[in-house]
Image (cartoon, rainbow, N blue to C red; front, side, top):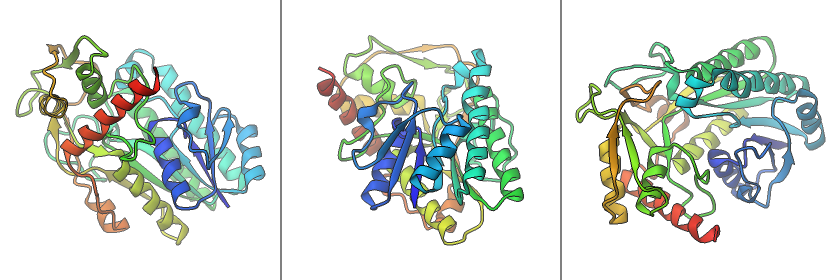
Length: 328
């Protein structure tokens, strides 16, 4: 029995591999290393380089390693890029996921956990969303993820496989032991960009839009520490293994922070008054997305351990400092 983690050389996937390995699981990582890093893969896992959308290859991996569960992180994640290059997102996200699901069915995989996104909700206003909030994604990125959610539901209705969908809100922070973190140099995640600016790796950062219908005019997001997010995955895997029904869950703390509040926190943690230049809105950005996270707490017994913006920023900043030393 083994767990296949697609995108296991990436930011969130590498944290999943650490958690599974820490728990004594047999882990196989599948990654094409286009955006991931082989050094980010925990040494206890088996690494297979390849494409998650290659049906024959993945079917072979399932048989070779006795894979019984798949946790699917692989995909493209930059909302503005999805607006300018939608076909890339429908290829890397929707089409790849479709093929991976087919390989899972052919290989007799029992459980499938999918990394989805809050972007499936679109423009929601300031009220926190719940899982049955109407879905209206504003970007090809959000639509590409929603299509995969639909495919999983249809396939589970037709085949003996159960699934779990976790809709992420804004994932940030790094492993407290500094074993992994967000390592893509040109990543667009707000906290990473702000930390890089504080460390002098960028001359300035941009605040995209100051005229939103939010308390201070900038976008509001629900930031969740990557370690808490991974804990939800582990609980969901246990739920499915014990015969739990397929489910879709929001992963969030239920508290939003604006772009200006995040910038202020990074300045506080770093002690650097870096430049944050205000500019026009970006395409595809809703004004506010937060969630209650009530269902994941109730169903899985999820209790966040790192629900603190200061701690999230501290671990992200420590990881950026670590990367600077590592890359010398």
